[in-house]
Length: 250
Length: 136
Image 1 (tube, chains in turn brown, orange):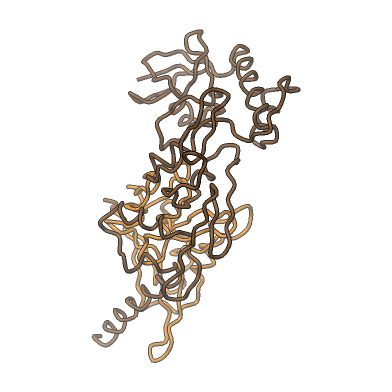
Image 2 (cartoon, one colour):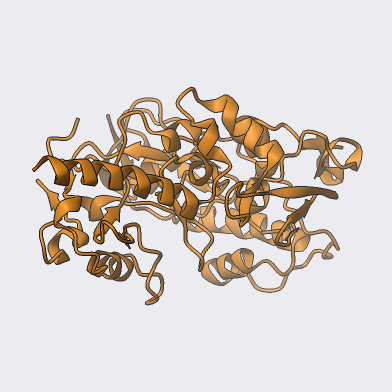
């Protein structure tokens, strides 16, 4: 299947989206709420492109053979600037939004800036539910009143403290605190595990470890609570016995 | 399955740790050496010798099973299990899962790091002075 991006023939795979095809072929489309491991939702509205003369989001448009796509027309950039202006009013001091505004020539933001720090893309909720499998976050309210929180904005019993939500947040608005033995995120404080041998702090909580154990049959429970240095020491001991037996044989 | 295999001959290793250096300097981050994916340990007497410990690229790998986003996938050309950083959500599940301690955390970026066989030309193999490491 072939699509035409900026007048150039580009190979595309059946069923993929315009954004996926363009990113794979090295074209740059700004996007915030797209994550390759998740189904696209089209929440941030930044990945606008022109498909056959109509402006639409690239992440939710499936490719068709012979599709004509323009990435940088004046029309697309005009809409992109408007979207960016609204996002910037929501989160005034985000480095990535600053960078994109400079790139697309957005001047002063005409809207009153909010005191919030979230662009309402919902990526944190999707990652927590679909990838991590904890399902500790939820959407609250609608429209401009949307918030992403643990249900009822209370510390969630389901949160495992993996900090994946903070990692994927495109504007880095989810804050957490890590000390040597505790982690605090979304108002919940959890203990970090310690290596059962040397006592070094592991980067995981007991709740997160329970989730990981459910994922596979080939995980070794006796080694899960060891730090990487102690695991390597175990490996070394095994290797040493092998080498010793070989040396005595020869 | 890949036709090329990474061999370790511990009996030839002298524990000089040149492999660790070559690994750290071939996985640099903004000019700073990265965490070495290979470790050469010197064992205590009675058997005094070096033993390299490096990712074994397991057939049924625990890191692959533990990954919630399928960011860890085998590169069929080199045989290495590689981290696809655009899929990775930095949950460190692979780091906990590896029973051999060969998935590491890069201290500068806090991202996970593992041996990727240098995309088909492992630097530890080319720098090993005694031929304890081989990739063919």
